[in-house]
Image (cartoon, rainbow, N blue to C red; front, top):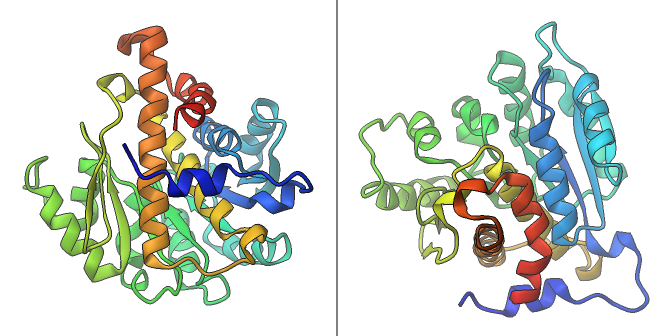
Length: 300
């Protein structure tokens, strides 16, 4: 079983505490017609134990998100005519992060690939003001990442990317990689860019360029729309909780991030196993995985 140290530290709740003691995540997600990704990531973060969640998105998406996740706060962002966030939103995002004590940021779910989102992700990577903050890049955040790839290694804080094989092939340009050869390539890629890389596959693995963790939880029922958004919410929440007020806003080291991310992957897979046990693998949805997170916490 995965080491208990991360779970025991993050599950501890002080008798005298408030929501600010358990982290604040900002999830940049969604576009016109794709509000669901942000909903799933936000709900997963809340079920994981985060104190505060803000979803940054265009108006049509965040209004739908607030109806689905009333516990979340909204950061309205400017949108293009195509319903995609524009690149100049990053200044507003950085100001919000600094003023509202955000501890970790996720970017990508439902973002869609366009010049505006490409510029936005690149500007976030280049920002020195939030360079020490844990950053999780998923889905379309990965698909628009190649332009900003060179900025990953220069960030003080550790970045986490969570591609499936196809997204990883597009990111690296290595189209001949398969489930057998991707592990060694991802290990070298993570070392070069100083990141933690989560490759989502039959048995998801995590590497920081030095170590490889091969996950032992999860099942084929998790091959369903939105399951990756749930993982993004769990990872970001656990990073934020670890870097939150309760530990003096410390900068998480590479070792910290690797341990937290592997624990998040384990918890996500266990929630999927619990959901499949109740419903069968055929019937598992991403929402079922979210609602099984509390039972996964109890089990670990």
